[in-house]
Amino acid sequence: MTSPDVHRADPGPPRAARGAADGKSSDRVFVVVPAYNEAPTIRQVIRGLRQHGYRNIVVVDDGSEDDCGMQAREEGAIVLRHVINRGLGGALGTGLRAAAMLGAAIIVTFDGDGQHDPEDVRAVVGPIAAGEADLVIGSRTGGRRGMPWYRRIANHIANLVTRVIFGVRSSDSQSGLRAFSRAAGQRIRISSNGMEVSSEILAEAGRNGLRIAEVPVRAIYTDYSLSKGQSFRVGVRTAWKLLLAKAQR
Amino acid sequence: MLPMQVFLILIICAILARLVLRLRGGRISRGQFAVWFALWAGSLVLTVFQDYTGPLAHAMGIGRGVDFVMYLSFVLVFYFLLRISLALERLNRDITRLVRAHALEDVAGDVAAGVMRPPLEGPSGSRHAGPAEETQEDRGRREKDLAEAVGRYPAGA
Image 1 (cartoon, helix red, strand yellow):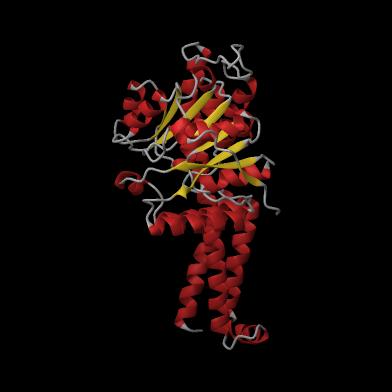
Image 2 (cartoon, chains in turn purple, red):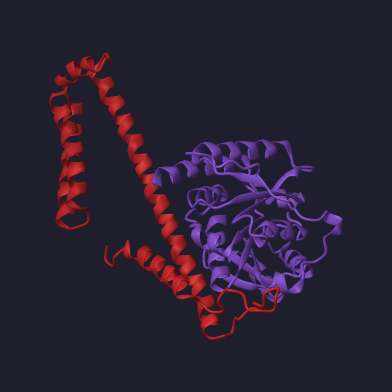
């Protein structure tokens, strides 16, 4: 398989010069936040997005045992609830579908653990709004300060596995901050349940001949966000699931 | 005949009888029955005529007949483990599709009732191309997903 062209897109004006998204264009953007037991951070995440002008926030409460879904609703988000926990892939698939049903022109996925900066939504949306890309990955490779060494190695391995299994090259295949055009959101079929969804999205984009771009984004590493992401055990399971997914294609 | 052979023959005969009962009860297809029956009947033949495993092993470059049976068992066990993993994965995906369809029904209902109608003004002030209600395409995908996931597990199966 030939490697699809992933280009580095212009992230837009410098961070300091970026303000909140202008009210009208941000109405076309739907931000999907998958959430599983994210009560400690969900309010802050939604408030941050709203402060930056994003009013259409779809939270997928993935069978949480805490009240993060209720908190999200109180903060004004559209909340969909999975009756049982299905994993990151399951939640993202539901969020993408819901955003498309609600008329989104651009769909952004944004982790609920507080590791993303709402300012960066503008950066990932930019290339799609400009018609330069169908899928934009927010790459954390520029700002790895605070990322533990084992996480860095795990990311490299995940990038390599994604490239070998699916033939798609990315500097940060596991990033949770992405943007899809409406058409891309509808064409990408997510069938995985767990963390392997990040690689599956890239594989689907490659299979559908979508234009993939990357922009640098900042990652905010806290003890909480580090506890929620990939671990070595989860990484091994993810690699196994990717192999199974490849066997089923 | 060795006592171990008698023991294995009894177990294999019980398994074969159970396979026949499952086929009669309609719990497995004819294809599944054929594969499993061939596998266990082959095991029965090798158990009864175990002297023939020696030449078979030599032909494959393996020293003893019992080693040949062990290697064959390992390959089969790993093959069936992979099959089970794939089946579990498909089951998991189907459960997700059901859970998703359930979660989306609420949104579809709210959109249809006009409760959920997000602001959709484009930058120029004109309404952008995105619809404010569930499109035929979206509804079709949702209903197809549900039907496919449910259809795989017919009632009474």
